[in-house]
Amino acid sequence: MIDIKESPLYFRLMCKLLLVILFVVVLEIAQDLLIPLTIAIFFTFLLMPVSRKLMQWRFPPALAIIISILLAIAVLGGLIYFFYYQVLSFGDDLPELKKSVEEKVGRLQAYINERFNISRREQSKWFNQKMKENTSSGGGLIVGLFSATSSLMASFALIPIYVFFLSYYKEKYKKFIVIISNDSDPEKVLNIIKKISTVSQKYLKGVFLDIVILSVLNSVGFLLLGLKHAILFGVLAAILNIIPYIGVLIGSILPVLMALITKDEISYALGALGVCLVVQFLDNNFITPYVVGSSVSINPLTATIALVTGALIWGVPGMILCMPITGMIKVVCDNVERLKPYGFLIGEEVDYRQQEHIQDIIIKKLKGKKPPVA
Image (tube, rainbow, N blue to C red):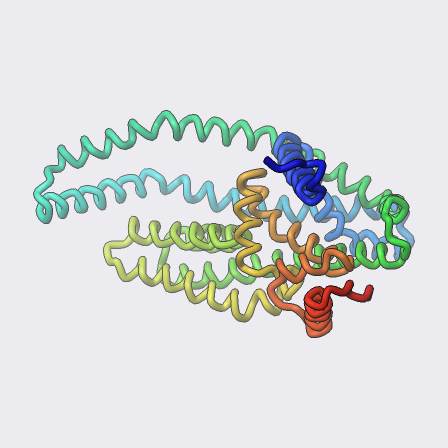
């Protein structure tokens, strides 16, 4: 039996663990408030250069912020309308697609009957049984997802208001952070805030440009294959690319399924898969490094943990927001002396100065000496 009073290290670890658990619980309970607020913070960073430019043109601060928000709403509204129009066009072809699916399923059943001697009636009976088993759980999942989405959409209406006040009172928030921080150098605190803002702006601009480039490349590839609704699947695959790992997989499966449904030859499905693989190769090796850059240089293990954690706590919004949030955490860790080892742990690449600093810490620790304060 461990005596907590005689084990201060054990007591501190337990307190930290309880704080982490409490923090996660608060994040999950207050997600209707925190998710829109987090999105608003990122949009504030993104729109800050626009409002600052307008203020340089002698616009009043409040009017400059409102104009920047209206411009963002106009751009997002145009993109949503474009995507909605593509979805409507897809909906018009649903009867034809359903007929094609029935024909493909009939051929598959005939093949299974001939190859494995399983009658179509037995196949249909097995399929209906599986569908019946999953209907109740799937229906509950859809209802829960719809309810959560509805509440989140209602909360998202507050995002422009959050963005306005976060932008209007940004100087007050900076001073507040400096006041409550224990750092003796206020310039260092302000420098960290500036770096976080720069990382967020660079990441969001890079992601938006990356989506545009991938949408064009995917759409051109699918159009050359003669795939129906090529633009819809090209844009959808590019948007899903925001979600690490999982989004890429889903975005690649959808056009392949469309090719299997609408085309008689499997070569079209292989071609759609080839387009996705080539575009993803270009994105990973050429587009993302130059467009998004190393603003969020997180190693794959940390990215996977962040992705799973974000999905468990906030669902799909958490999967999208996990990477920029982790990048902001890394910026803080890299600029706070006692947190630099954590920045080193979660980062993908380390510059030589930071690597030498980490090695110096290790050497001093092995010698039993405290590392010098940088």
